[in-house]
Image (cartoon, rainbow, N blue to C red; front, top):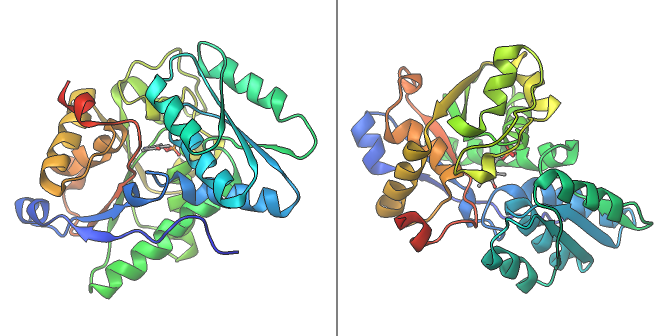
Length: 306
Ligand SMILES: *Cc1c(COP(=O)(O)O)cnc(C)c1O
């Protein structure tokens, strides 16, 4: 099966490299046809489901997971229904609908949207696509590591730490799976959350999975109240370093990135970039960090200016 995602560029951030005296590498997942890395995992899951006879994809997400599912559905030629909560902006609903997916607005919060998606998916030929919690999704996300290692080695560089943002932990789980497949079981991973969306940190502190009472960060893409058990499990068997940044740091990094690289990314992605832009102490001692530029469609010039 030809994957639905593309191989993305690996770029060096020259100004950050010079400022930090490191080689700062960027995996440009914002260039995926879905605007974020999510097409890697969700694309693989949808592809497998359709190969096994599914003719209808259902995904509860007013964000990048819904968008990636819609892109996958079009590519695979199957009916796609994206359920979004009432809080999802009209522009996002239209973007998803313009791809050819059916958009259903249901519920005030994601939890109730999700229940409706589960109900809809309870029909023959229909598959429920979760935003982050499925082995196919981790397997698809792991392809990012295959590429990044090949690309960095072609430049004669050895990545010594990976930096990524964490919502429900699907991206992180995929990256760690990829690292382990390549024998890099000791390569540290810096897992970045914003302060109002820190469900991974809460689980690490508690020593068990925790459900946050609420999400208070502007980085709504990182707003999973509870991480996947897989992601928490990884923190117990890999060197995962949890870092929290403020919304202001995430937004500022996204703004600086737009200016430096002429690329717009969500605050969810700015969170990971902030580790380098603010030269956080967790980066000390590393020579060649790989920052996953996870991207995101929920941003425009006006939003970044506000
Ligand atoms: C989904 C997403 C994340 C978080 O990924 P998880 O797998 O939920 O941890 C971060 N940034 C962007 C742009 C995303 O779309």
